[in-house]
Length: 114
Image (tube, rainbow, N blue to C red; front, top):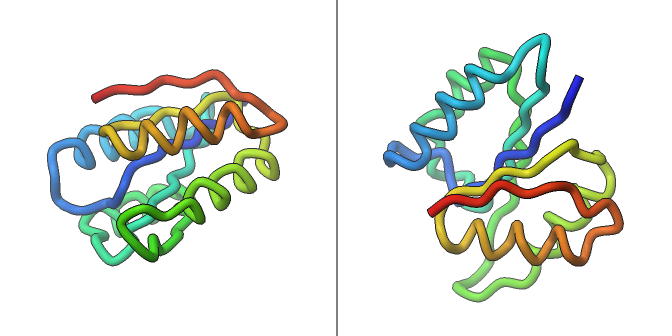
């Protein structure tokens, strides 16, 4: 079974968040284990439906506009969990995902979208 990490800013009620939530719900199950990494956990519109489906959500609170701590938290998560691939959506999550994968010991394949 493959293990995927979806990276996005929040699980708020936006269109990008809806797309990733729907994709996660479609993939999560016997073929793939999907987890999320979000750094604005206070925006959590899609969180209940994802958790009800068994999707694990890693929450990190971003402390400022330019916060390298998000990058370091993501690197640690990728190294610890050994994902089969990472998928990110939107500019800033893509930035974090791309740099984390380069600095990670695991270097998982990436899918980034804007």
